[in-house]
Image (tube, rainbow, N blue to C red; front, side, top):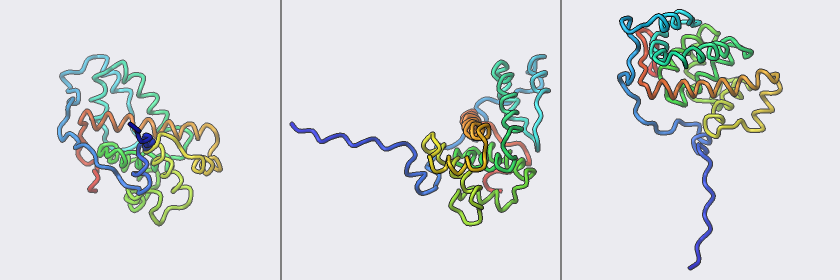
Length: 210
């Protein structure tokens, strides 16, 4: 019996990147799978941990009061997350990368929080909405498109292409290049966590519909 040679496996995400679309996603929980910690449940440790958190803009209680249910992890995660929000990347660039990641991961909580932060970082409402259409949408300058393309390449193939890396390196130093990749990776972790735990948006935080 002659067997046909096996076809090489398709690299994950290749088609989604080619068409710039969001692939079909599992329905997100509409209620918390792990509820935010209530005031009655707080211990001296969790009270201290929550008191150490600050955000650049807007209400963000639910992510913290949910994740603080794992105090040891929370204690180590907050400084890392905070460093990425005040790191070497320009704030506008950072928010383009995070918004595109939140959109591609279909993380409405992440998207809404960073709409608020991106507005403070100088992104217009029109630019924020255009992030949904990706790098090929008309209106981006060349480097903005490169940032969005980098986020997509990391999402789709877990690696920035040589061409995109070269374009990033024309403006960014080595610290910024490292930070960009870690930023997008970190916000995948956050999106996976928010989506799977069912963390719900606070009142006044925008969703995908506005």
